[in-house]
Image (tube, rainbow, N blue to C red; front, side, top):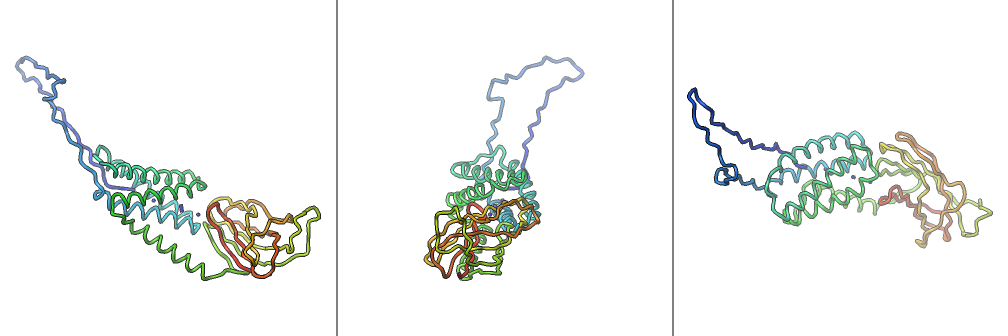
Length: 294
């Protein structure tokens, strides 16, 4: 997966209407011509600028990043707590910007950003976590647009820190190879690579005839807060970096309830022996990579 709003108290301008009443003595009543614009003083809307939104530009992004980090850690309670705060801030923002004059491009950029935040907020409230990756992508784009057009390209502090951390993690992962016995976690799903061996077992009805069939044993633990489906979506690359094929033996598929785990097997046909790379495609846009030798 990862899958954050502005708050301030809104000011309500109240207009009091004074009626000229009658005293004890009888008077002639004169009606005011309500069609005469001279009888009304036009009230100008207060301006709302990027400067007015700056504190909430920071705080809403901090909540959004907190939600994404909690999702990546499989911390459902953390997601719900941050989302509750997000709900409060969104409500306060609506009050804050009501009846304000907001010039473009800030008006369009702000609305896009807030609408994406509201979509994220709603998807979490309804536990529709499948939609959060797409929403998160749109939210990231709207934060960038808001920064470029209104804050001289300056991203919120929390977003900058998140990007920096992800870059450091990517560098660390590229220099660290996970192998047999290691475990990795993504979006609350933990995969442990148990063993990788060549097998002589073959499917008599298969006509692909790979040089080698690899049996991959692994364990999947689900702490994502939702059901997770193991569908053997695994890519295996041989020592020449050529992708193998799913071999039709007893490949594990099945549903794992939250808090449960499963011991699974996957068979792949590859041509070359030696060092292989195993990629577990846990989500549509995120995967875990292990290495082994056969």
